[in-house]
Image 1 (tube, one colour):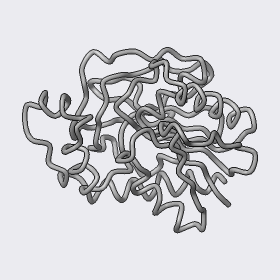
Image 2 (image 1 turned 135 degrees about the vertical axis):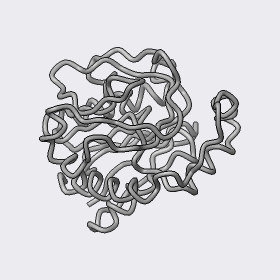
Image 3 (image 1 turned 90 degrees about the vertical axis):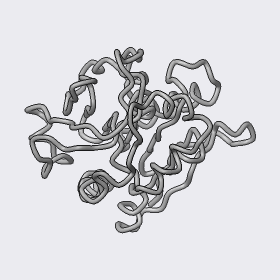
Image 4 (image 1 turned 180 degrees about the vertical axis):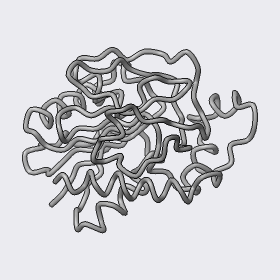
Length: 226
């Protein structure tokens, strides 16, 4: 069993999602369409599709994002599990016809997310406390797609998580990151502008232990959808 994992920059990789997949014997292939030589894959043999984050906008008229949107739509049509993280969640929302636009503020750092009533009943999110401090790194947001279930919100961004059908999930926040990943993101040239705007240094270790627990729960359950 194998899933396709779409990266948009090399440093925004699966992180802790990979552990959840490997624990269940699920293999994965990275799809780096941002590299001009990359081949657009067929999803016919894939068990699921994962779309990761990135510093670009879901609204950018980039050929590789357009190709990825088509593949997301095809995976949804085929009833395959789909997971979108940050930019990936925005792409999932856009593939479902929702508007993606600038959030009133950039949300970068460790901030609480809270579940909606539907979120408290969601099979992937069972085990979340009333508020969980997670990592955020985004400047855009999206409307809730028609027919989707709203699962989580934060003070700075209303639509933090949603489910479409039984197998497609979008998470605006980052449960997949390790402290090493966060430290690497801070050093990346693509993130230099965001880092300059921070009012205090971003500590990669603030809530890393709990984040790993939540990641194991959520991504493990998503993997079991396959």
